[in-house]
Image 1 (cartoon, rainbow, N blue to C red):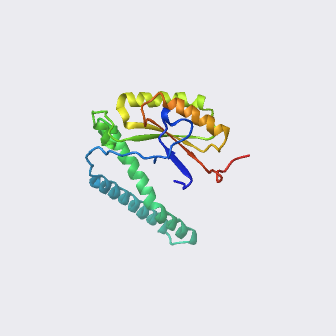
Image 2: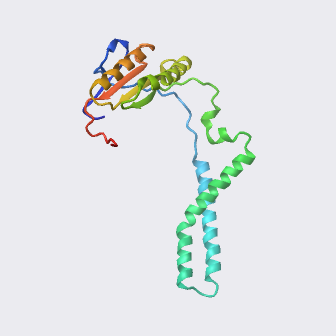
Image 3: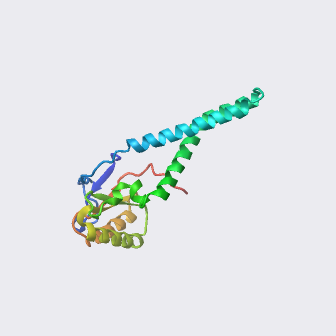
Length: 206
């Protein structure tokens, strides 16, 4: 954070200006199992190596017939340099094709986290909304609907953070007033507002 940045929890009680409390969220990590990927990685690495080596050997047999020329040597060098990446690409494609054709549920096989039946969210998440000289009456309603729906399902696990780069002046005051009225619709701490006091380094297109 910039040293000139002020952080605050903005609710209806805060009035027109952002507060001076630190802007922080405590993260509560849910216990989860860590899948061991050693076998998968070993198989893919072995397959990629076999494909790369096969490509190099075949290229050698083709180009070496009848002796070497400068151009054939350059072609062989190019094949050797690119063989690992070609092998990895081919191995990834073959692995994906095998999963697609042989596994009943490919999505959960690739992303084991999708196997979880519970939909409860344990982590706290900040929804960052970046603004600068915006029409708050236009952007706040949709953000409010999203925040309200998320908090209805998951309680206080979601917080909306409005990060402002609006320069000091009447526009900033109107912005703060709009955020204050918006935050009054939610419990304390659900909407947080932060505006840079000094934004002289902002790159503005004229």
